[in-house]
Image 1 (spheres, rainbow, N blue to C red):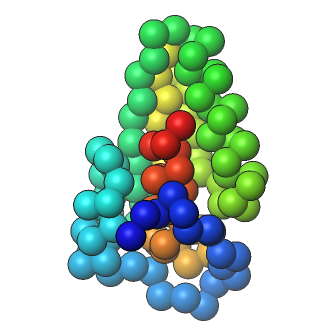
Image 2 (spheres, rainbow, N blue to C red):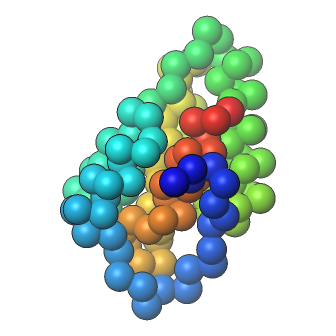
Image 3 (tube, one colour):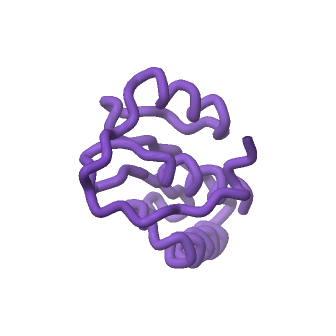
Length: 107
């Protein structure tokens, strides 16, 4: 399954968050993302300078808006970006998080 070809779907709650087995399955489809407490996934990115890091953050923001699924983005240390993904409405992980992770990796 190519996650970059999927679309995020609106989540209003009521869904069951992914369990550990589902998380492991989808983690194998994205590069270097790590699960945290089975409630979010995160990844760190490092760039040559602030300008590149900021450009990346803006590209992530554009994808997030297009998908209507918004990560927590941290730009720090002048050249590092950390992204945390979770589906807030269900208090855990859903397909949307892995779709967005794959699209972020494709930048």
